[in-house]
Image 1 (tube, rainbow, N blue to C red):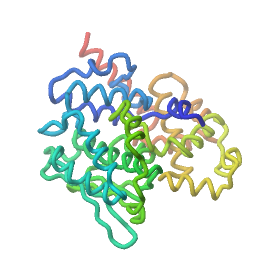
Image 2 (image 1 turned 90 degrees about the vertical axis):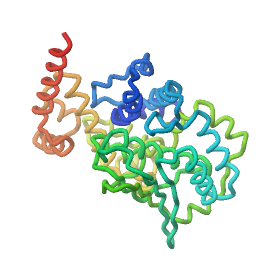
Image 3 (image 1 turned 180 degrees about the vertical axis):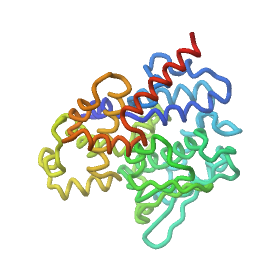
Image 4 (image 1 turned 90 degrees about the horizontal axis):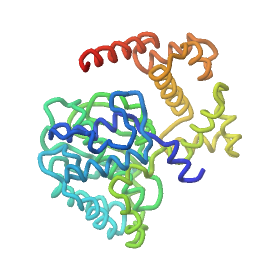
Length: 353
């Protein structure tokens, strides 16, 4: 699939958008200034944002706040920090050395979060720890996004430096499961746990630390165009095999394709497809369920389509199966979900005549 077409279909949950804007809100800056022209409705929590618009917003927030850490910390991370981080890691011989350079640099420009890499046998851990509690509430959206952002930045930058995707075996996040956690399959790994505490732990194969840094100054000059927001568009799990699988499932609806059928359409064996998805931190089932969930939420939010029709359009053999799935996704029946949306809209209208 061409890169431009992949970007067209790639999107992020509204949870990542609202998290990014928490620093602006706390500094009493109106997000409307950075949202202008991007067609992003913060009130529509079920909507998704194309990744290219998200990258644009990423850079706009940084420019507005003069802070590459989005106003999330007491001290600003001044613009240019990302470039210096890239240049420092670029000169390392291996990924292990690059991580050590990142650790030292970030301890200067981002003292509120400490980065380290620990190796034991054939496994390694990337750790991101608070040096002091970032917020009183461990599930504060600002704290959640701070950990999401720094893991994403370090992981994607590492992938770029070695010229390949690096699979995360699992990640323990130090907060409760957020509403947009299903997207973690696409951004980090399907094996995400929410354990609380003050430290994020991402596990991966230790042999990856020995990979050589393959990029040079010429590649960096191109990479920095559109940076640092561009980092959000790279090395997502839905930019390769996951994208192709998701698109095939979507195009076939209401027919429900099996993994074997999708593998055949991609001209590979089911075993090869399973392996490739696993390397990207996903599974056929998780992709299929995430797609159905996204479409279902959008239909119930934006249309008055009968629930039975939504179920049929998504390939459910009977409406009761859709009800069970929807309750599992949201904790609510489809009717109650719609009713809550209607009540919220009515209250908003009453408060803003």
